[in-house]
Image 1 (cartoon, rainbow, N blue to C red):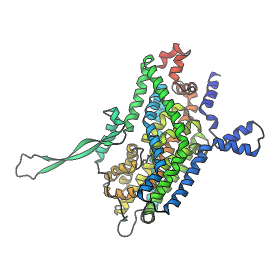
Image 2: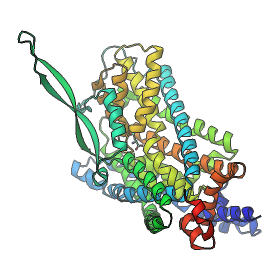
Image 3: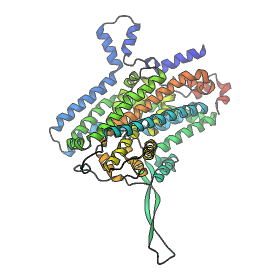
Image 4: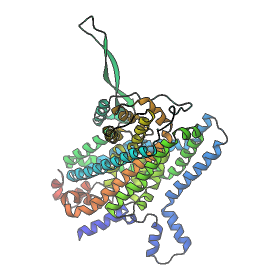
Length: 529
Ligand code: ASP
């Protein structure tokens, strides 16, 4: 009975009542309140979905403004000014990333029993791995069907193409860098720098004077600009677990991170209302800025189509099908609930920048509990990139086709595995995936300078790619919520801790603290591992 009451409270506090019908929020109330005039019903639906409606309107108006202003042929400076309101949205979202990721992971890890944490993390990783592998396979299959690189004659030449491609790195060094970044040597610099291997040629002194001078390419460590979010994520989780282990002594810090987290989410809810305007100008600015569009589509259109169709298949069919098969709930209703976040991903091309809005959406519209969303989404935004893996596979096969290299079975498996692994290392920033594409090309022995072609059209492909990246994270959170709801009864102890967490989390505190603060004091030692 107590369990049942907890469950009801949990639903109410987490908005699970919306789970199956976010679109019909207004109608739902109507059903209960008998007959309402049509205008009232419309008003309620509009009110319940106002942000999504504004976001859709923002995208449409952005396209119209972009198309109109494009005709005026603005100078580069004027184009920069047009993009200013969009730039502000990106700056606001970036500002919030570090406090949000660190505080939500510390308080998330501290509020869930370590056993349940391991289980949840394990399921999430399994889901992320399987879906990324499926996305990679779709990429390879699409590239073989559409054959974007089967050109007669020479490779596509695009005027004004930026030839600066990322410096190629040995595959082993790429993976070692990934592991090094998991353990940042300095937490402060991890907030804006990551480790990257560069190479130095060192002359080898031979004892034999008659032999030729030989040089060795020696890897050296460098710090490059860009947040080491992987390191911060790992640190925050481990720190949260350590705080929980401290027991009473850790409470004060857990409380601190909880309130920091909640305050950050309040800021997010304010920023959300600015998102439609920001997205409108991001879209308009990009349309005004586009150059060589016809030429790009003529020479790389098949590659673009291949990526976008692949993203659409995975995002509109495969992920929803997985969600439906497991939960028996309408996946498109779930997608509608996160529409604002998806539009933000499209506008900003950054999973990290979309994270704050995605958390708000899944919690408020799709009934995912805070403990799950704030633990899983930052991890997903960092390591789960279905869209990136998919387009990297298309790009690898495309470059092989351009260079008339036929791929054998082993090379295809290598592409699938390295794309899945390198998508983990890709940063959730614009063009993050192109930078790690070099790992795949190196692994199968293809020239990395063709990456410049991929970069030329990445501003389009990266948008659908990022939408897919964040959609995968959101479905992961939705499935974990379902998993916790369903299994806590059978699995008992470990996962019920998560449910206890949810029910007690309504007043925005850690369940751990609540439990101790009130009558559960006698048991507190048991709950601290
Ligand atoms: N822009 C993508 C993201 O932020 C990463 C990528 O380029 O693949 O998720």
